Image (cartoon, rainbow, N blue to C red; front, side):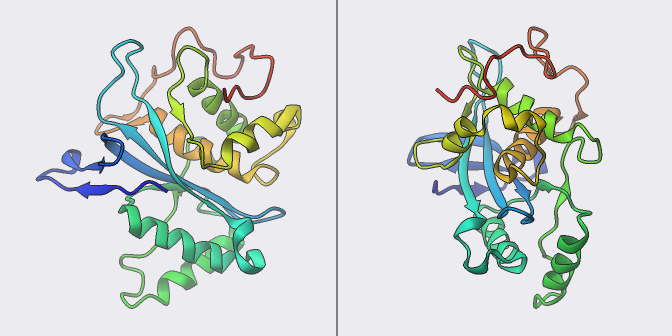
Amino acid sequence: MIILEKKIGYTRDSVHWIDRENNRFFRRVVGGCAWPGSRPGFAVVVGELDHEDPLIHERHLYLINELDGSGLIGRDLLGFIQRLSELRGIYGLENIYGEPKRGSAREVLNNFNESLPDQGRDGLYIEKAPLIDDPKCFEFCIQIIRKHLVEGRKTLHLGQDSRLPGILAGAGDAVMTGNADDFPAIAALGYAVGALDVWKPSEGILKDTQDSAYDIFNSGQACPFDVR
């Protein structure tokens, strides 16, 4: 777990997070979550560095923390929401991306927010991840992660303590025909990374953020993920 210090300036764009231990400054820190279902839920916190890498002209992304629902007693939805709310508070997250319209999750989340002392005015709210209503959303998650793990242009750093490198390496070819319920950790990471990739501060959706040398739906990589 990385400890961040959140600094708020006079404008929304002047918000930043500081990782003093590793001397990193993040201009955005967001969450991604995949609800519990046939498998335990998973959530991530991902930060985007303030400055571009001068060699590749892109910003590096770092996994800050993760929530593995398999470690929760009973693996229940309410417990997952409570832990996710704690994670939001620890990092001062303004945006958590996922599937807000998921029926059972939406009902439990609404009840959770209404039970708060302020009756949800500062509750936990999930925003739509990129392409969340599109049948290709999970494929997009896979490819956006792969894009940031390309050898020689790697911009996604998961750290040594995360379960995600093992999950990605062990996903195998089955991930190409799976879905978010089959691979919640990959979905959660894809939601967060995808949001950082396609939405930029004060700019909305970018039409041309994709590297022209990288076809996000036809990368040609032999293995699903290169996590070296």
